[in-house]
Figure (cartoon, rainbow, N blue to C red):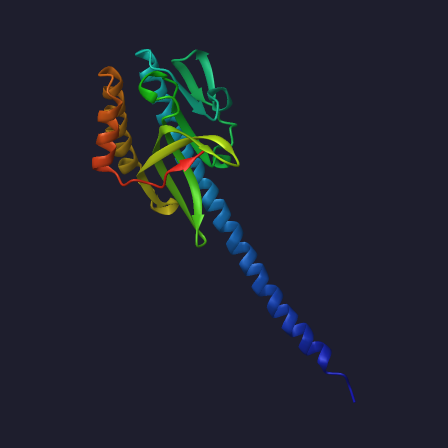
Length: 204
C-alpha cells in the first residue's frame, strides 16, 4: 500500500511554517514601532533635559546629564550653540537622567529620571524625581545611599502624550528652580509630596 503519511506531515508543517512566518513578521513590526516611538520620545526628552540644564547653569546651578551631552549633541559654541546628532541611536536609550550636583541642603544626587520598563509584556515609560534621604550602614554590603522618589508620569509608551509630559516638566522644574533660589529644598519636596504619588524608596 502507498505511504500517505508524508503528504499529511508536509501539509501540517507548511501550516505551522506559515503561522511562524506570520508571528515573526508581527513581532518585527512591533519592534520597529517600539523603536520608532522610543526614538521620538527620547529625542524630545534629551532636548528638554538639555534646555533645563542650560537654564539652571545660567544661574550657576550645576547639573550633570546622562547620557553625556557629548554623545548626543554637536556644538558650534558650547553650551548654547547646539543641535542633536542625527546619527545618534535615540531608540537605544532606556534611561535619561538630570542630576543635581549642588552640595548644599543635601541636594547632591537629586535627579529627574526618565526610563522604560516592561510589565506583563507591555512597554511603559516612567518619569520620576528621586531625592537623596541619607545613608545607612548594612551589615553585609556596607554604607548605602538612600533615595526616596515621586512618580511624575507613568504611562504605556503608546499612550505617551507630549503636552502632558511638558506640563509636568514645567511644574516640577519651576518648583525645583525656585527652591534653589530660595535655598529651600524642603519646600520643593513638599510640592512634590502634595502633587505626585510617592514611589518605592531604594538604596545604591
